[in-house]
Amino acid sequence: MIKKTLLLLLGVASFSSYSQKVLWEKTIGGEHSEYLFDMVPTLDYGFLLAGSSLSDKSGLKSQKSQGNLDYFLWKMDKSGEEEWQLSFGGDGQDILKSIYPTNDMGYILGGYSTSGKSQSKFSENQGKSDIWIIKIDAKGTQEWQQSYGGDGDDRLVQIKQVKGGGYLIAGTTNSDVSDQKKDEKFGGLDYWIIKIDKKGKVEWEKTYGGMYNDEPRTILETENGYVIGGVSNSPTSGNKQKENYGGYDLWILELDVKGNLLNEYLLGTENDDQLNDIILSEDKETYTITGDTYSENGIGNLALKSEKESDFFMIKIDNRFRPVDQYTFDLEGSEFLMSTNITPSKQVFLSGYKADEKSNKKSYVAIQLNDKGEKVWEKELSTSGDDLLRKTVITRDGALVLAGSSTGRNAKYKTSVQGREDYWVVKLGREEEIKQPEIKIEAFPNPTEGFTQIVINHEYKEGVVNVFDLNGRLLHSEKLKYDMVAVNLGTYASGTYVINIKTDVVNTSVKVIKR
Image (cartoon, rainbow, N blue to C red; front, side, top):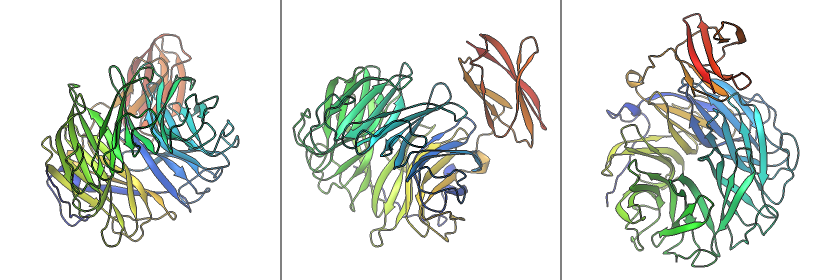
């Protein structure tokens, strides 16, 4: 077992690693509070932030509040500038927890809602809170939405697109049997796993749990079905067949493509252990499991031991979920792991937030590890307030973007404040090592059945996109606004089309095949 220590404040020291320098930071929000929960990189080297907003139209928020908390999306370019923003909500609380890019260049949004049928929510509430899914296309236009729930609290944790184009939802439930939920509840909170098709129709749903609380945290698709990773403090009860070692342990389920249980695994110590992510190796022979632990004695089937309160951990396990290597990392506080990434060099990047031992003040923290569990570099980002990191992504240009929520003010590296709590986004990298694209324009996907995203890989002041057929007839034209433009070929016949980008810098084209 290896212990790692982080004692670095932003700007105090630097490392040779490319990702130590702060390239820029941005604060986003309205006059009240914004809570970030997820983020995905985009093809144009930017990214899309997802969370919820309590603010009305104010500050940097351009849309009115639709209720209490609304789903809130913010698209940033590679320089941190706003491109567009969207809000969805009803008359209650709408919490956007998860976003996932879809094969058709759009996005699936997943969260939960207490809203009834009102504003931009089209379904009545079934209980205290329902899972609420919205599908948007490449231009941000809503295609469909669906709600799922019973008479209790049903809350989405994560949604992913899976083979065949449908979606898998992992959430928690304490609802009884209803029209939408066929299984009995087992305890306080149960795993609720729902498979829906491309339009949101339920194909199957399953409930797993014991007599106390069982909460999924992540979805991994495999060749044979799905792995659902989460935590449980239930003893053997309900349809849980494994006994706990301590408070919360890692409870991992292997499901087939119909949601039927193939295997279950329990990993834990005498205290609370929290799971963040499960990553399958390229050879599909081993897994990496990450999270944080309060273990003091390493009693259980994990040999983890925290130094002070909660520490990050990384476990290497075989394909039968037996631990091979285990590592814990103390960052001189109480650390909570929120995001796990694999770098292009196959190293593991762990990020989250740390609570200071004395003041309990929270700050962003991150470490990068090699395949031996040794620290390559470390970073702490802090303002004058509480900074809760929620997600880190690696962008197409090789930089790291860290994002979460912050209440901080008057800090050296946080230059603006919008409200009580804002989205806070920081991009790390070294300018000389950021990958510069050589191709002036790109098209994804190509071929396509509908939308293709045209990525403009050069700086320009003004420009236009034109769509031609092979006979040279102009079919569509629009002004360019951003570094990426979605072109919809879905209404055209199958064939090849020429998409021309004309700016004040270049005049170039790409051929795109419409299936």
